[in-house]
Image 1: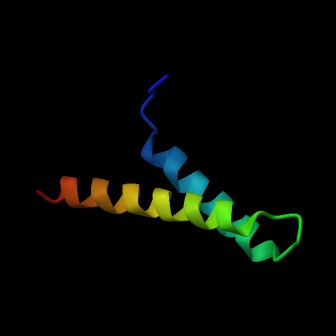
Image 2: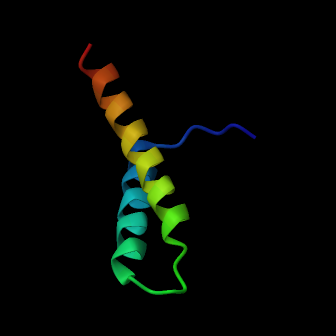
Length: 53
């Protein structure tokens, strides 16, 4: 399934990832959340560049 992610959802995902990484808990898979955050930021930046064209 390939459903587009809204900009609002991306913002929420970014906040969630940042919140999880801030927990600094052994129960948090930091590598996964860091990758998730990187993907979200990259997508936000790509969309922002596309909007500025």
